[in-house]
Length: 144
Image (tube, rainbow, N blue to C red):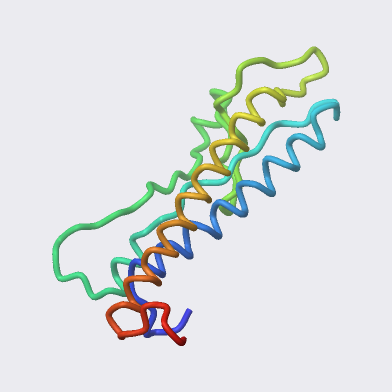
């Protein structure tokens, strides 16, 4: 992103990209709802600490997601290594089918509805921010 993008606009853009990725993953879950052994996936929430650092925040506020490494003892107790990247196995499931598939269409459709609502909210915030910028620049819709 360009350096001259206001922080709010950058945050909205980051949130919209995350929502787009979530929609892609939920669609993939729905497409694999009958695949034996398929495990539903979810996208991690965005980490806004980078955005705070880019804004030159002088406060001591720090946002961080803990990074977990699996020890031998943890593995012997049956723990699994966390997935790499921002797509992970969804642990918030309501049932598992006999073939090991844990995708529930109702859950996925609820997530899709929430994603749609969040995306509409971000779109409205983006429009309102643009409108405020145009007003501040004296371009409130007349002739530009």
